[in-house]
Image (cartoon, rainbow, N blue to C red; front, side, top):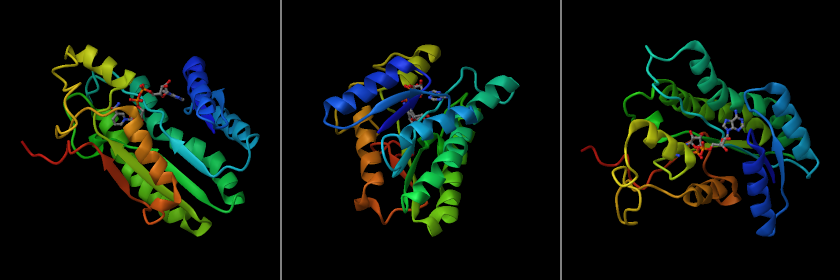
Length: 224
Ligand SMILES: NC(=O)c1ccc[n+]([C@@H]2O[C@H](COP(=O)([O-])OP(=O)(O)OC[C@H]3O[C@@H](n4cnc5c(N)ncnc54)[C@H](O)[C@@H]3O)[C@@H](O)[C@H]2O)c1
């Protein structure tokens, strides 16, 4: 498995963890907003064997994300990483998946595609776009035996969430961190989303195509 990230140390740590668990993995430093980086990453994946799956996870949030406050550079960055990254990696990965006789692409959307909070304009727009893009890719790639699905996580305890809480002056306890497993809409752990992605990639999920699977512990279920 090839791990791609702009942060070399984080990517290497993930690759090491995969190897420690008995897998084969290498890390590559690449920016999904840069086409030549994506081309290099897909070429590096080829060195590990045939490409069977692409999981698009890279995503960014920016501060003060309103239509009025966001400047062009911030807007372009959010869209270039969250949506453009799927285009750029796909452009290079799809021919390789085709050569392998088909495969799976999993995109990472968010509950923000369906219900959001204040100051998330570009982020929510990017996640809504991923839901539509996933459906479109499934239509275009079905002929090649490539299944395209997305996961829409709820709140997950990651550095992104912790940074955002700090920016908004919300404590982890107030944000619902550490609540019991029975709590509707509880904060999830990354491995719970990884488990959903593993299932979506697997043949057991072959009936799912073009769809975005919400993995939010029921966060969207309750109106008030
Ligand atoms: N954390 C949540 O609550 C939550 C909820 C719903 C969806 N998501 C989505 O899940 C995905 C992962 O989020 P996270 O919470 O783990 O964020 P994170 O910031 O903790 O991790 C994101 C990773 O992506 C990498 N990255 C950022 N820009 C990149 C780029 N241009 N090229 C390559 N790598 C890049 C970062 O270095 C980092 O390792 C994102 O798409 C995010 O929008 C997160």
